[in-house]
Image (cartoon, rainbow, N blue to C red; front, side, top):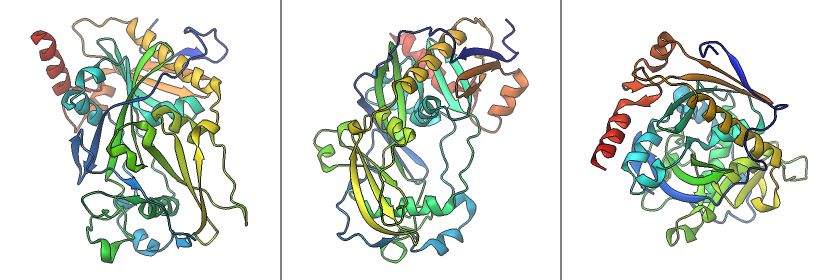
Amino acid sequence: MDPSRKSRIIHISDLPQCPLPALLGPAKQSACFSICNERLEVDSTSALRYLLDPPNPVDVNLREGLDRFLRLPRADRTFQRARRLDNVFELCLASANSEELLDAEVVTWRGILTKIMVGKKLDLNVSYYRGVLYLEEDCPPVSPDSVGTYMGYVLIKLCVLIPKHRFEAICSTSNNFETDGYNVDLHTLWNTAITRTLGSLKILLVGEVDCVKPGYSETPGPEHYVELKTRKADGQRATIPNLPRWIIQSRLLGTPEIFIGFPDSTGVVRSCTTVKVDTLNPAQHQIDWGARVLHGLRDYCASFTFDGEPIPVWRVEARKGFVNVRKLSALEVKMLNQGGVARDGIIPLSFIESFESRGSLG
C-alpha cells in the first residue's frame, strides 16, 4: 500500500477492529494549565473561574456592550481555538504528573474527539511517536457568529467568580472591570488534562473548563466542573436541548453539570436551569465510533516503519461513517510547520529531545 495515496482505512460498515461497546473509564484530572496574557502556566489555577448564583430574577441583557465589542479588531472578536498541540506537549513535560500524562496512548484536544464521535467533518494532522498517537486539527474554521460568541461569554461573566484578580476583558486587553465590565477576553482560559480509558486505549484529553463549583478548591477534580451554555428561548418556553455535542463534550471531561441561560429574542436572559449530565444519555454508537477511529488510526500508523527518516505526518479526513488517510509529502510537512518552532512531524523537537533525555537517564 502506498502511504502517500489516500486510503479509506475505516468505514462504518466494516467489522470493528476493537472490542465493543467501548466503555469510558473514570475521568481523572491529572494536570491543568492556565493561559493568561498569552502565557502558559502549567499546573496553575490563575485563570480558574468559580460558579456564582445568578441574580433572581436574572433579567440580564447579554447584548449590553455588544456595539463596542463589534468595533474591536477581528482578531479580538475571534476565539483563537488551539490548532497545534504545543501547549499539551509542554504540559506533559512540565507538570508534576508528567509520567502519568506521558503514559497515554492517544493524545488530543477534547474538542477533536467530540467532533469525531458526533460525525462532524474534520481534517486532522496526525503523527505517531514511540507508541503514542498525536492528533491536532488542520486549520480549524473560524466561527462567524460574533454576536453569539459575545452573548455566551457575557453569561460566563455573570455566573463566575475569578479568585485573586478581576475578571479580564473577554475580547479586549482592558483590566478595568469597573468601566469595561462588558468587554470580554476570549484568550484567558483554564484547561484541564483528563486521563482515562476509552475501551482498551489509555487517552489524554485536554479541554477548556468554563468554571467549577467551590468544592473544587478542597478536592480538585472533574466532579466539580460546570459547562456554561446559552439557548435561545422558544417564545415563552425555555426548552432544554438534547444536543449530542453538549452531551459528548461534557462526558469526555467528566463534567457532571451544564448550566444553561435562556435569552429571549432581545438577548435578555429570563431564566436559567441546571442539567445533570448523567440524565442526558450519550449514544453508545457515537462513543464506539470514536474508539474505532482511534484504534484504526493508531494501528494504521504503527504498521509503517520509517527508520532514520523524519516522523511522518498523516492527513486524516474524519467524516460521518468513514476515515481517509494520506501521508503528507516532505514539502507539505515543511509548509505545515513553517514559521513556527522546529518540529519532527507535528511534534516539537524540544519535546522529543527532553523525552529522549529522560529515557537515557532512566
